[in-house]
Image (cartoon, rainbow, N blue to C red; front, side):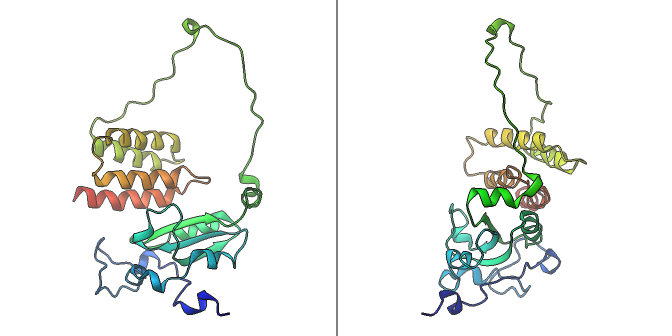
Length: 227
């Protein structure tokens, strides 16, 4: 029986680094010749099934470029493999190099024990002790107040970006500000900022966080929103 992967073209995609991308965001279209896989990603019948490629790389991290039509799916079905490795850092390094106009799907192709082992010493678990002493409400200390945040929505998002640029990055405060921005967009479901904020939080609320990729996508997305 012929493997379905053999019937598809270019099931493995080069990372297509930003150095070869279109200079202007949104420039890629049917006539674009920048060399990126943007055009072919719209034809699902020519793309291999992710589950078939995954069979070749058990207990590894996999990163795929997926079609925009499946980007919102929890588990996209079709895609081109960008990178595979048992080391999660290598996968996130590879995805940080992928073109701005590509949709990326990354996952670990194995069980939890194997995934935990892939982090090595980076993944540490500590015993949690629970203090069951009951403190009267009147004696409970007030929760600490967070750092004041800008009133204007775009200023708030840019301030989160500033927190990510700090050395070291103030990840917790950046996430807090992005979530406050999301809350302020509750009554604006059609705002293009919603998808941008969701994407940024997805990058930051993983272990290890993809901070460089979140910064890149935030900057590119804000350019389009402000324009």
